[in-house]
Length: 146
Image 1 (cartoon, rainbow, N blue to C red):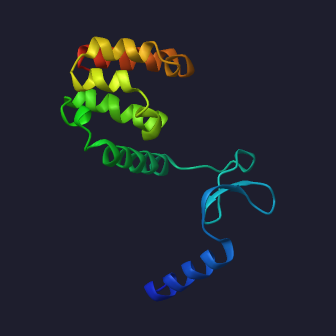
Image 2 (tube, helix red, strand yellow):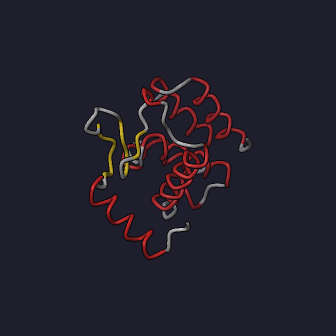
Image 3 (tube, rainbow, N blue to C red):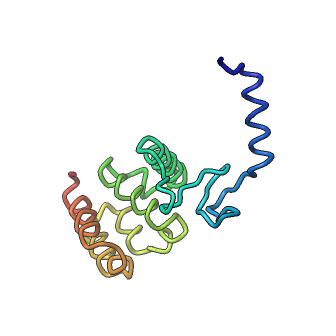
C-alpha cells in the first residue's frame, strides 16, 4: 500500500517531533554519531552517507562558497581555473580565514599568479594541508590548467 502525500507529510512531522532537528553532529541516546533528523552515521553501526548524499552535500557547500566570494574583485577578474582555486580555498578554510590572506588576495587581484603562489607557499596553511593538495593548487595557479 502506498502512503498518500498527506499522510507522508504527517509522518515527517511526527518523526521530526520525536527525533528533533539538529544542525550539528550529536551523539544520540545510545552514544552513536547522528546528524540532521535522527540519521545515524556512526562507523560502529556500519552506517554512513551514500555516494549521492556525499556529493549532494559537497555541491551545496561549493554553491555556498561561490555565493560568498562571487562579488569580490579578485574572484570576478579571475579566469575559471583560478576561480576554482579560490572556491577550493574558501571550501577548505572558510571565507573568514581566506580573507586574512591579504597578500595572496592582492596578488590575485593583480593577476600576479607567481606572487599569489609564493604567498600561499609561505603561509601556515601550506604546512597544515597535504603536500599534494598544495602542489596541485600551486600548479593550477601558475599554469591556469587542471
